[in-house]
Every structure is written in structure tokens, then in C-alpha cells.
Length: 331
Image 1 (cartoon, rainbow, N blue to C red):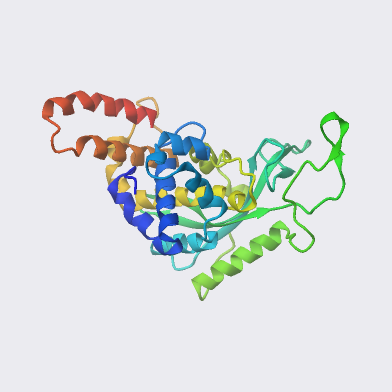
Image 2: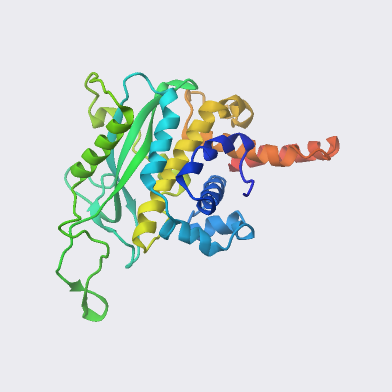
């Protein structure tokens, strides 16, 4: 398997081995490790190219991993849930919300026009074309940032609009269906129905539950309307046209987000000081952001790959050190 990330990240990946066949697990390992250091647009082909994964497998194998391989997304969610339990309080706190992944293209499976909360105002609603994902997240506080609560996704469902038999004008005035992957009457489920399904599944994993105090309303909880998964891991970048690939590619990015935070909680926080950018003009920052976590993980990987070579002499190390400082800013 390709050695693309720091060695301390490997135990987290090995925890998912039983969820896959051996060939699929190798693809999962490679794609997870390749996405984290990748910058720019993170389409599947770009990830394969930037990490040179074709030296490991044929590029079609990675596409088949999402479209044809035998693995279940909920099994991955269950494993993430188990990894998070040691960090959780006695009473588990979860939340369900939906998020819009904007898309473009006539043949994106399961996409449709959905309300865009970030662009809408109270007087003027705005709609955008894309996927609407319903996400169940577990709220966890870690020792490295006890004053902050992280919402870590463990289950994801794609909301699909009900099938419409009407045709709309297409190219050249020809009537055609502009959306594919709409749900039939038997398949259609509302967002609350999808939320209830995920809540019941997590309740089965958790066993006995306790009723806690009422949580703040969403408006009180939302301190930052930007989403880390979209901003730093390319959640909106995949352009899938196959049903199974659509329902797997983007949710897998949520789990990569979880694994990066888990790595930081287990071992990465010890390396935070050497990866921190010194901004003398920015004195108000008191907590860790996901950007800091991602920078630490990339910095630790580069440092291990470059400086762990036994034949590297002191003079070469001295020359390479400024390069690492430059890479810290680029991370």
C-alpha cells in the first residue's frame, strides 16, 4: 500500500480493514491518504494523478471502488462511532442537519434544485443545483480544545426529490428530463424520515440512552456558517454520474475529516507547536481549527518523509529546513 501519510495515521486506517475486501481496503487506504495532502480541486482523477496512484493500481480500480466494490457506507460510520466513543461523555449528544453540495452538469445523478441557506435572505430565498445531504453528527469535545465542540459526521443520506414525469425544454427546444436519479414513490423519503432512520440506527449502536437537557436551537449553535469539509477537503468537487458512486464518494470525505481530527486528538496535538504559523498580528486565536489540524498532519508527513532517511547528512538537513518552513505556509 502506498506510504503517503505519517506512520501514526496507519492505526486509524487499519481499524476499517474488516469493512472491506482486501483489494477494496487497499483502494480505501490509498484514496484516504491521497486526499489529505492534495490541494486545489479534489476530483477523483486529480487525486489519483497528484499522488501518482497509478503506480499502485490502474486508475479504473479507484473508480470501481466507488461504483462497484462490495462495501457499505454505514459499516464505516459504525467504525467511526466506535473510534469516537472513548472521547465521548456518558450522555451522547448528536445532531442532524442537511447540507447542500453545489454541482454543475446535466448528467449528475441525484442532483436537483434545493434551497441554498448561505445565499438566501429573509426576504429573498435562493435555490442552487446540487446534492442535498442529510448528516447525523456526534458532538465531541477533545482535550486539546476543551472549550470547543466538534460535530463529527457518522451517518450520511442523500435526499432525492420525488420523480417528476413532466418534461422541460432542453437544447434546441426539445423536451427532456433535466434531472436523473429522482426517487420513485416507493423510494422517496423526506429529510425528517431520513433523520429518524439514522437516529434509530445510532441508538441501536449506543444501547441504552439517557435523556439530557434541551440543546440550544440551531441559530444559537451556529457560530460559523462555513463548512470545513467543503473548504479544505473538496466535498463539492466529485462529479459522479453513477448512483452508487454518487452515494459513496462525498460521504467518504466526511469520514476522512473525522479521521484527521481523531489523529490529532491521539497524537497530532503533540506536533502542533512545530507546525503552527507564527502570526504576530493575530493574537486573538485561542482554539484549534480544522485548518490547523490539516496543516499539522501534512507537516508531520513531510517532515517524516524528508528527515527520516538515515543517510541524510547534517548539511543537507540544514538546507532542507527552510523548505519545510515554506511548506508550512503552503499547507
